[in-house]
Length: 266
Ligand code: GAZ
Image (tube, rainbow, N blue to C red):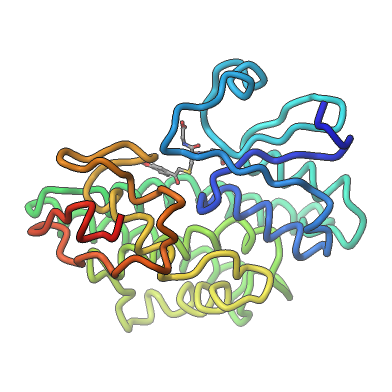
């Protein structure tokens, strides 16, 4: 049971999946109803947390006031949307809910491709990775062009689908920086561009900044995920200190440069 009888979310501060929860709570004006407890991804998970998750290490994890545990960000989103007052973020009309459900199912491949691309270390694979990423954006474009051709968001306002995708659009700032990846100025991407650009600036979704993402995800750009250490390095780019604001911008040329702890301000 959490100490104060409230809900607790265990999370990694810059993780896109936990940002989803913060965006939803902000939309519902309940952001302060949950204790977000930070877990340092560069350290082994504490035993008490592993005991609660039965060994699972992926975050976020939600613990209810009476000590029950939920994981998977989309499941937690649904739960929070139902238990907190305020307008439901999820569509209530069955057909509309199904439409946003279809878009939601596309998040997994979209996320996986973005991470595969940023983590790629083989210059020979770079063009293929870029094509695969563009394909993901075209699939989103086609979906929106079918179900929401004239709008900005999927429905009238920033809602469930936007909560799910915005943290990924923000993480993919690392593709711009480390891969020079941008959406072509082409009709095949115009609808998804309009969606993404509106998502990025929405006031409920400003928990992370481009600078933070670019600096913290340096190690991903060098092929190492989840706080693990690269050869020759003694600190992960995900450490909390020094604060990312105090560090220099990392070298953008990930295929030629391997920055030291010192060059990264770590
Ligand atoms: N499906 C889960 C959810 O909650 O929606 C995903 C949760 C998750 O992956 N959490 C990550 C975690 O806790 C942090 S965010 N990892 C530590 C652990 O021990 O499992 C995404 C990737 C990827 C690498 C990292 C991430 C990421 O591909 O953002 O692809 C989508 C991790 C190599």
